[in-house]
Length: 389
Image: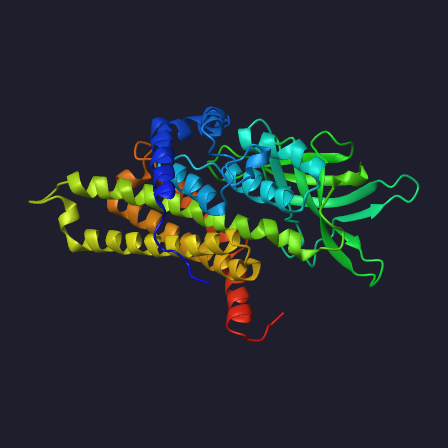
């Protein structure tokens, strides 16, 4: 399948308009919101009114009718302006995509319009304390109550973003296959106020408006219609959300890296301690050129992954999405490090807004799946090497 490497006019127009929105808010707005312990409600609301939040969702449910390619542009450009919206990864990209592809008509009508216009948000819960994102080791279980037909969920989740502002969480649980007796992953919509559904905030050394939570599910009873998709579909439905998550994480990292490089380049153009600005020295210029190249290359892989996913090639998209996430995360970490190094002591001040990115950039290396697990995936799936586990 051919993969376009040049964006369409519509994509370029979307980039320009989202970039303009991001610049109206900027890094100062973002850091102020974080410092005050608030959320980026104003930016989220305006992005929703302009149609950016639901650009990937079906038009018949209030979305823009685009795909992950368009939504990744939105997140990248907001990040490049210093205002990355992490919930874009979770609410419209993961949850919206899964419901749009596999949800019932009632679930689509109940959730997609709200996810598109920003009036509703949904969190996503897969990671567990003893399983990470290994779907084969997830211990959160769901069983049917034969007397009522309800689902009963029990388990724990950890590092779940935005649960405090989300009306519900799309929880990955495991049900028993009646034919084989084996447990298989299934997805459930769990309302925030469901009895037995508890949350506690995790204190993080990370400056972000989205808070992280540990969740407990203690005999949480859900109606039969809380199940999203078919009970027997298993991993197909799960990875329908995880592939967009990886693509959007790449967009998150790319925006962050671009913001850091732009700040460093502006500084290198004007900072002068000898006869010429420091940007004239190759020891400064070449590393910045190198990280710029790495970011551009990572974007190409992200675009390929988004194109394959939007075209319905789930297998191809899985490989490309993992590669894109890996490449973008590595490029972002190096870009931030080089930007801070370019500014020297100024790179660690609040004024220039780069120091907080040292921690933030590493999130893309760790979540939603570590770079080591991506290398495992590529070595096994792409290269055909044997597993060590």
